[in-house]
Amino acid sequence: MMIPAGAWRRTAVGAGLLGPNGEVSPTIFAEMTALAVAEDAINLGQGFPDEDGPREVLDEARRAIADGENQYPPGRGIAPLREAIAAHRARFYGLSADPDTEIIVTAGATEALAATLLALCDGPDDEVVVFDPCYDAYAAAVALAGARLRRVPMRWPDFAPDLDALARAVTDRTRIILLTDPHNPTGTVLTEDARREIVRLAERHNAVIVTDEVYEHLSFGARFRPIAQIPGAAERTVSISSAGKTFRTTGWKVGWLIAPAPLATAILTVKQFLTYAGGTPFQAAIARGLALPDRYFAELAGSMAAAQTALGDALRDAGFEVSAPVATYFTVGDAAGVGGADAAAFCRELPASIGVAAVPLAAFVADEHRAAYASLVRFAACKRPEVIAEAARRLQLLGAATTR
Ligand code: PMP
Ligand code: GLN
Image (tube, rainbow, N blue to C red; front, side):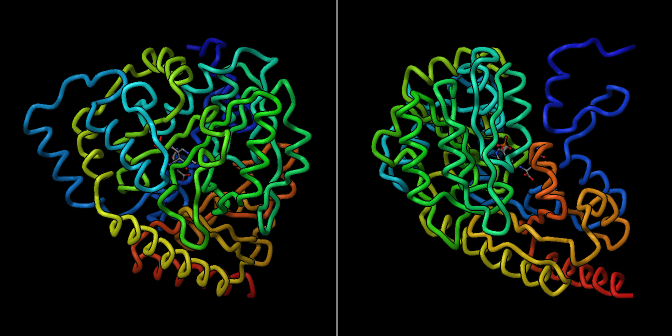
């Protein structure tokens, strides 16, 4: 049967998700993971850890299941998790949030983003400003919300956001300034100046700031500070995070958002008709995780710093020019020197040629910006040291092949 035309087509905006015959193609992450599995390659493409999260968190999920915590949670999420989110926010950032009115638990950060964009955008006159490259779900969710995306470039090699371009992009049509901080795929964090400028522009044009902070505990070369700390920001900011990265539980899809009560209410009205609610025993487990001592969070960031250093060295030794990430799972390499002038083609061949998978940065950028990112490749470092070491060995083969 022909798939009827519908909103699904709009998910293709800027993301190349429709195949030549109108069929839905997988996301770049699913595509590269499928290639990695088919070729038995080391998967440095899709960002997910290859180790389980902390024992206390896993045990708490088992306990909750065994104790019968298996029915629908409240739409906003179970009270202990909302309280733990508020306590975590106060402990790490000195920010307060009311668990009853300002916090909503979601099916991952992805649902929080989708519900926020659907709730707050109202048609094609509304614009959402993002930094480019940006996470692939943003373009799709903005398109589903029927709004328009405006992209402000971050340029290789330092990926500093162009604040002059931002000031030109934000206008009275801007409904939302949508940030990722720390930033996937570039591994940067916003500077204080950038955060202040974003808040100034949002205030001037009465825009909402939506900030996706799923890598909040994975900064190591620079300190991550949430934009909601800037004076004037919290009252217009929706802060989104997720347990996936912080507790190595990407498959649990427990996320949350923190927003002023009127914004949270608007978002909840949409969210209740997306999933309504889910993951009761996992919510209990993440409440336990958020209460872990500071040491847990420091060690998580420390292990990522070591993994990123090892990955960066491996890429440099193999002939890539390499970015200097200060946060997240990701290092970006310029593959021009190793036969990867067209990184999209390069990434499709890599699993078969040397047994490593990665994703091209072109998948995160607008069509009109693609040329500037054509040879750039994102590698994920969230793997055990011995796996990174084996990837390093395989990447050396690439250098050998290209010099022959
Ligand atoms: N935002 C960013 C920037 C991400 O990298 C990811 C993927 N982990 C998500 C959102 C999705 O998060 P979740 O799996 O919690 O839906
Ligand atoms: N967030 C993960 C990444 O950037 C992928 C999540 C997904 O597969 N959609 O690699």
